[in-house]
Length: 228
Length: 77
Image 1: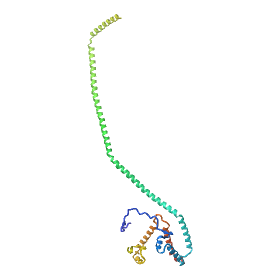
Image 2 (image 1 turned 45 degrees about the vertical axis):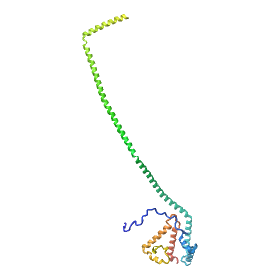
Image 3 (image 1 turned 180 degrees about the vertical axis):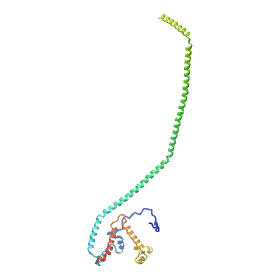
Image 4 (image 1 turned 135 degrees about the horizontal axis):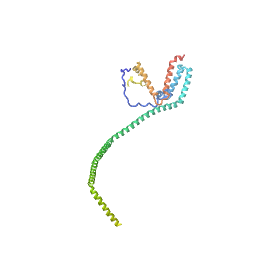
């Protein structure tokens, strides 16, 4: 449940990238006391001031039994020795390992960013190419128009050819008809003439022509015998 | 600047009671103060790229001292 009484997003929106983390932490001496303490005491007591203060404080605590020495002290001393030895020995390795992990994280993030930049750049290239292609649209339409004109022309010529062929066929038919008619008329006329001629040869004429042929043949044979 | 907005380290010794008077001792104020102290400590010693043992060792030392202080009655017997 969101109580709307609390105003949201009241601070300034800062869209700039976050400032980077500082490289090193604050300076600390002996792992326990910040450097500011030493700088604070330096003007009045010099370099050895804080150490004197520490020694004096320690002796005071011990002498007044504010800090009692018992078995816990010995245990604390042993534990501290072990810890300090471990830190001094394995510190740099652990630091290197942690640095490597950080490096990998940063590298992956950077890789993603570079990937994205590269993809966007290729997208820009392709976009420019598309824009250039659009300019060629007019040529495309010219080519298409030419194609269509060619198709129309071809179609027209084919149909013209068909018309010509059809007309020629009909004219040929007419010519053939006329020829046939003339031929038939000629034949018929020849037959009629022959028939009439044959009819007009009476038997009398036939006998006379046969007698004439025999006389001619005799004359011919006499001339042939005379020649031989 | 004005007294109530200065940090503790910038207050002079003579002005300390007055500065304490201007402090916000309500629960929210105390919690806010604790929050600010922790965040400044965190940003200075722990939230860095290459930290060292100083960040947590100071916290552990403080814890040791605090627990010794709480158990002093029992230890000094």
